[in-house]
Each structure stands twice: as structure tokens, then as C-alpha cells.
Length: 108
Image (tube, rainbow, N blue to C red; front, side, top):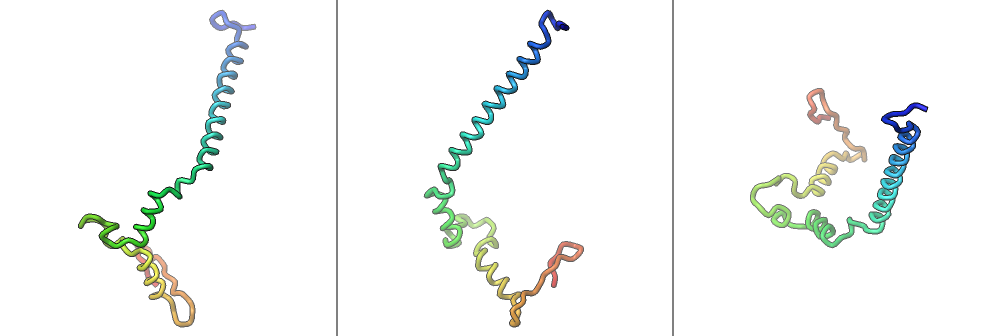
């Protein structure tokens, strides 16, 4: 058997394999335990996030944007989407199809 630094190479290979197997088992255990912990707690139903959702969708503009600067045209997004759908709905019951031209602008 060949010797590297007076150590049989089988011991080096088995030792490296043992270390890699141990690391893999530990990381698999941590991953599974983290997944099970996340399934038990639902972060989307916390009181803070429910309140933020309600203010974002049903709050007044002064509650959403507390300062004078900010994206004013981002307010009333659901209303603007509904207005856009109503504006593009024909009496026949079909929707006007919009396309992007070669420059990235919307057109009929």
C-alpha cells in the first residue's frame, strides 16, 4: 500500500468520507428541522402584517404615505386597475388587446 507522510491512503480517504458524510447528515437534519419549524408558524397571519395589509388596501392616502414626498401615483392601485379594465371593455363583451411596439410602448 502506498504511504503519504507515513499514513496509509485508505485512512485519509475513509476519514474524508466520514467527515463529508457527517456534514451532509448534519445539514440535512438542520434543513428538515427548519422546514418543520416554518410550517408550524405562519408569518403571514401575524397581527402586524394583517394591519399593514389592511392599511395598504383600505387606508387613506395620508395613512399610507405619511410624508409629502413619495410615489403619489402608486395610491389607489386597485381602483386604477378596475378603471383601466372598464375603459378597455367593449359593449360586445370583449376586451381590447394591448400590444407593445418595438420601442416598448403600449398600443392597441
